[in-house]
Length: 385
Ligand SMILES: [Zn+2]
Image 1 (spheres, rainbow, N blue to C red):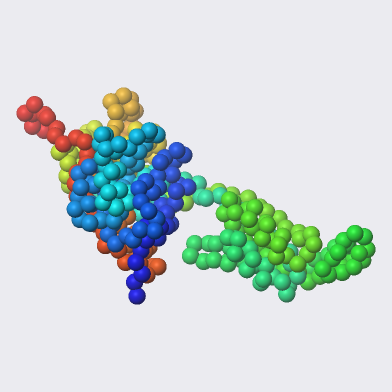
Image 2: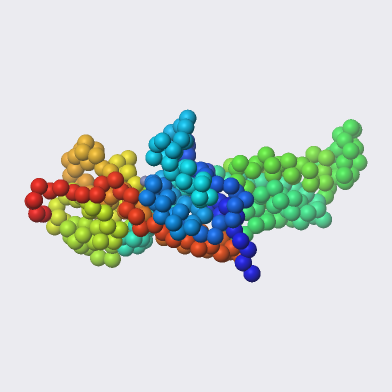
């Protein structure tokens, strides 16, 4: 049986794939237009919420437009239909189309923008160019009389401890012996004031996201049978994950830069301007770094990683020129920003459809093919290349 999806259900599914906490600080991601209780039957995916895309979504009777780029980057004091963005907001609301933005939270993870681009270019053995640290984790260890151990595990799990991937209520219990002497004013659960007590206890260990530390400790104090439960909280060392800025991967065999750049241009959706290339066209390339979107800021990382070629967008004259002066500089392929990030749309479509199906919800969806790259023609003065 399928259950109709509400906008709130869809937002929950998107945010399970691309959690908002992975966004850069200040990046205006999330729900921009829409009523969480509205029903969503059809979702439209696009890079930019520009007028042509909104018109397309409205015409197709979509209920939600999911885009990569924020519509409202900076604070606005008006959404009157006198500006292009105001017009977009009016049209979305009057046709009951929601708008959701997944921007930098969708750049770094698996099924994210850079990974999608790397896969579209045929790269294998992918790893992040600049891995993110794992979400900070703590471990809590406490000591509890054996008969109460499973109940305590339940209480800590209910507060969010013991979550590891697709598993919950994960705990490790070790038998041991606890000993204490209650003070004169104590009201011990086991034992008597002034007398040494020895109790068969379990040491219970569970991991937890660091932001849950307070809630888990409160749950422990509430559920533990002792007046003064003993417990330790450890901060676990950070280690890298499969999430991060950009991707590095391998081509199945070395090819010339000329051949590679042509294959890149062919693999991405067409625009009017194609790809710009910097480097010896006969140079053989096999290791490739990619960053979806504007990638000036990762030039050094790509060079220090020792790749043969770096593929990204919006490279500017000075950073690119200075980069090329290094003897070990990779070649550069600068692709249209829109076409690079478009590769994420079908991946996000599949991932979201799957995530909703897991909760019994079926949606229709479509990826926009409208090219929203602002550049639509490269004038070469008649020169052939
Ligand atoms: Zn972008």
